[in-house]
Length: 253
Length: 253
DNA sequence: ATAAACCTTGACGTAACGTGAATGTCAAGT
DNA sequence: ACTTGACATTCACGTTACGTCAAGGTTTAT
Image 1: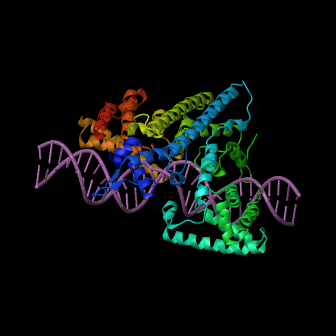
Image 2: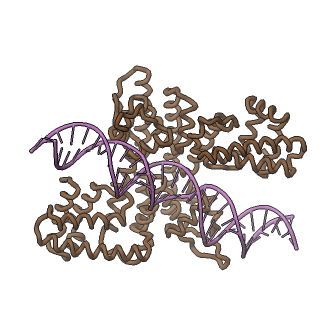
Image 3: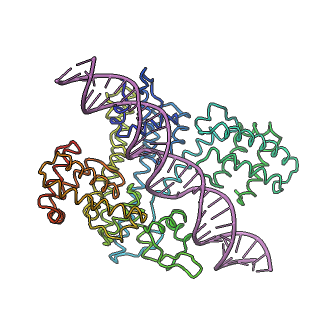
């Protein structure tokens, strides 16, 4: 069964504008375009839209959703994961309700309550949970330098930006190679490498944090795929970058 | 106990940028500003921030939150209402989980499922629920023409826009008065009145819908406060506007 | 005294659309 | 065949709620 754009929008309870936007960004591409330029969607798109809406329900941003849907096409596994996350979200709402009850009791003078207890359960923790849960999965897939042209749509880069990214990547490799030979993770060259790496990472991450960055470079050391890649740049450069980042971010793991 | 901006942000798990933004829009004004220009918040702001975050959790937009917090200062009543809404949200998540389970069973071939069942429970219904639950409350407070200067901050209007709004309102009253005397809700003058009313409403509503507009003009008829107000413009003008809007929106209630 | 942490304002940018303009296409009715 | 209303397209501007950065002032701890 085929759906026009308004039919699918009505079915899913979203706007046609949303569907056009999802098409434009490559998140939900119609099954085909009619000869008159009209979008037509079929069963595969219905199912994919359902997945998208589950992720949206869990406050996952669209770029992340797109990446996640590239990582796995196992529908049952995805659905079970959504279920698990929704059960977590349910618990989080229960925590909020408990906070309300505690606050009411406090207002009535029935119990004491410290100010920090008043904010237990709010959404910021959900966003952090997303970052942890989904960020790790994305990093394992896209934190790798072998980004090819097919991913430019994902990153929504202009030609110029893509070119800039290539230059930056080349610069990063050159600088890292030279920095490794200094054997000084705290030196100027090493710290410049870190700054370049940070700039590079920001092309991929919507929400940067030093912690996440540190986790990534630690993964370069721990994961054989990345370790091998960095060995090919310069021997020992994964560990070197990890050590340099530790200083750059002023963090020790 | 007083909190600096970062202390309060950390306490609540939000950013200092968010707190500055809330100050700027008047949603959460610090208790005082220090001599050095630093913001200081006290207990009242802590409690108000908690209320704001509960509304945010329920996907209520900030302008609506601001309006709601002007309507009622009864903390216990607000908390009980949040609780009620969160319990609804919990049910909605349970519905989503049921949708997942049904979809999994469908994929496995264990049961039949129509496409429309795949979208049961998604968030758009929550947004509609907000519109109904909170919109009505806002309308009863702000859908009234007696907007005074103290509300311009709420609407975030420039001087020019405020002036335009006054002109529009005057024009609306004049046109309505003349339209009523035609006794023709479908006539040009009546339909012009509706267009003016729609333009006027859009100053207040972030998300316009003909249904909501119809509900509002119906309320003008049903609610004595508004009815009396419209009688003072021209006798019978509340019903007239309701009838004219029915034609303008192509809806019959 | 110094460095780091904290604060301010100003301003640009982002994500995910909502809205409207202008125009083409389709289907049903006259 | 023509008309009208519903449906579709692209283009483009605007909105909301911040994230991020720059530039510079203030406070705190060493």
